[in-house]
Length: 352
Image (cartoon, rainbow, N blue to C red; front, side, top):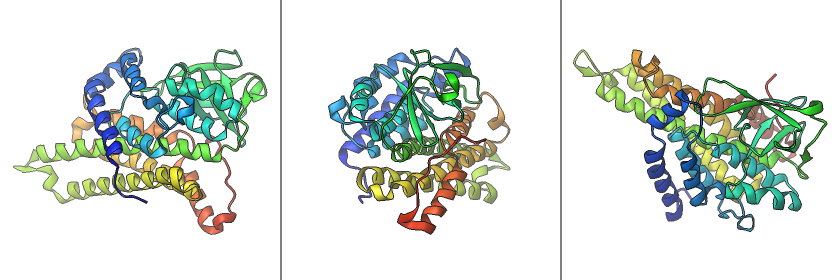
């Protein structure tokens, strides 16, 4: 395992940071949240032009043929910018289809996803209902996972009802998806096992959560260095500095776990299940804890609408809730540790 990025990976990170700094600053995030929720079509076109919508998909489907590690680098930057975009949902669904689809299904679905012409999304369902599906209102393909089976639904086919939902995160669009007939009607089951694809999707979520935590940490450190009380920067006070140190610890832990999982997805499949659960559990906890601490360490201003830190908190809450929760992943890690290679790999279900 290499512990440093290659030159190409550094270039992906640099390019993403520059692009998103220019096109997805907090003023743009606020405009989306306070407006009609419409994403920046020009930014999507730029992501497509860079080939990033297919960054982890094979070249035979129009992708770049890179790995989950490169996708993780990119998603960490998208999380850092809290970018309002359908990129994460499309990437997660593409990873699952790539892992579980038959050759015919991959041929039919992945070229559109890689090119950005058609988008997809992914969620867990119960009795044919998925309560929190990101970007379902604009997706062509909706992949619902229930009882260990993934079914691809054509949103244009009339077999699913998409009901937009308001959430605490106005920077991303969510919907409730109901399958006609309680899940028995239209849709094409993916041919293969879904566990590996779901693990890759969880790594994608962990990457965005890590970027969110990093941004919250940086904003907070800058603020406590500047804010003064009793003639001293508040960051010099022990209670504040200890809290900031804990934020750093959780953020770095999430990053280490996420990059280990991404490496396992690309290079050591035997470690994928353990790595994905470590990553999602660590990143979900870090995202929630670090952004909450950021609000508190900003003092009174942190609780105002004008303070940008709350966008990070809200995105982290929703990202942590997507797919399997941290508690499920911790239980899975314990089971894998106890049973080793004999452990079965169940698929998660939505929270009751």
